[in-house]
Length: 126
Image 1 (tube, one colour):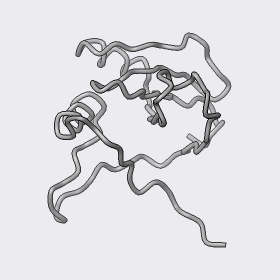
Image 2 (cartoon, one colour):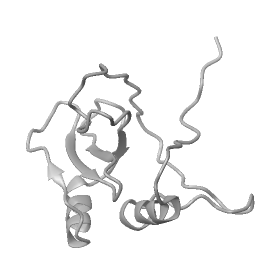
Image 3 (tube, helix red, strand yellow):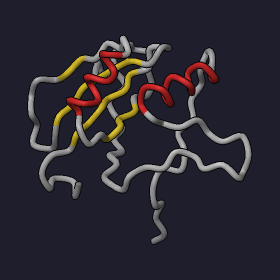
């Protein structure tokens, strides 16, 4: 059976797409999509990607109308949290160390939830 090899893009609606793209670039390092084919889009580091539908009534994402949440892998959650907080971004750090890693949550300027995940150990071949 043929299988997909990874996520080729993540597309969503935004009130101010340019400003939101700039925020992701500035605070999380997700580079802005090039305007021509000569540029290089954001490149991921190889690693696990969890694909998991949640129940329609989940409270995990926050607002009931929120249909998605993205999870970004990070290599040093503490450093990322410090960087975001220094830039005035509110970060909610989960104090629990789970078997699969450490987590924190932020929201982009339009209120979309972003989970930051630092995998630990060999749980997901990091």
